Amino acid sequence: MADEQTPIEETTQAAEHHYTDTFTVPFYGEMTLAGGVYTFIFGVLAALTVIEVLVSFVDIAALRIVVLLTFAFAKALLVIAFYMHLNRDNWLFRFVLGVPFFVTLVSVMYLLGVPPSGYSIFAN
Image (cartoon, rainbow, N blue to C red; front, side):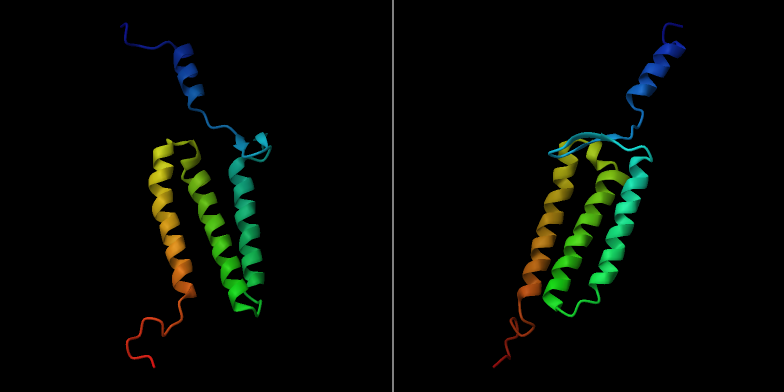
């Protein structure tokens, strides 16, 4: 019965993988949220959604597109980092997800700048 673990060892192993409400903020340091990280991120996502709805009423199309894409990008990063737990995974997983995400974002921004008749062979 040497393979069995004592309750103290099991508790220690479980504590190593226990989720905490303390996380690291770039350029600030560690931060602990009393209500929980998921609740805070939910509030940030809700606030960004409300701002997106308000920005959709702006008459300047170029500004509206840039702001909405930026907020969509920020919301996607928050969901990926916290709800998909990528902020605590290996850096390779972030790289494998981040590179195609960045290439897609740059491609979409480029294609938004091309006029609709830019690729037409029949344009005069």
